[in-house]
Image (cartoon, rainbow, N blue to C red; front, side):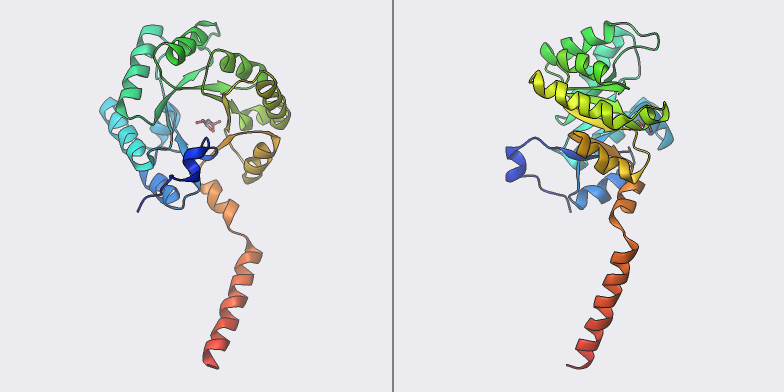
Length: 241
Ligand code: E4P
């Protein structure tokens, strides 16, 4: 059983929760509930989920893309060498129409070269880019100016540095809106269930979440107690029928 995203969904951009995993069983489970709007992966997630070797990465990403199609799936390049990045971006996007390519905002030593690549891929190669590993609104603004479809700020890591991620998200929302930039704000690096709602409230279009957080988001002890009460009284009704 899969979810359908026709009708109203076709009329508007898909925003909401993206599942931050490459575990195909978890992806299928949450996709069937109709509550996710995309999937994000990165090399660290793939390694943690047991992918090893290039052919396994290809097989898994294709399976994920097929399972959630037409929802978007982000696959991150594994190199910071410009020629290899270009080749990988073309390769990943050829695996499925709904795969977009994640590129870090700059390399391990900084530099502006990745912005050139992002601009080239978006404008001349017709490849949708998710610019990742960003910690500030100003980085995201530059990525959005370069033409990125998605700008990913790592809220949990921002908080871990002692800054309030919500302030950066609010600032970014305002900047993108005032410059009329179409980039979607993804907030990732979720650490607590509360992050999901507070980041949407601050202006995120998309929040990424690992599967375990979604389950905690849903289940409430008082809801359980209330359901037990309904079921118990339902039994009484049936017994008296
Ligand atoms: C988002 O797209 C990233 O994959 C992810 O949320 C990174 O989070 P981390 O800080 O847990 O590595």
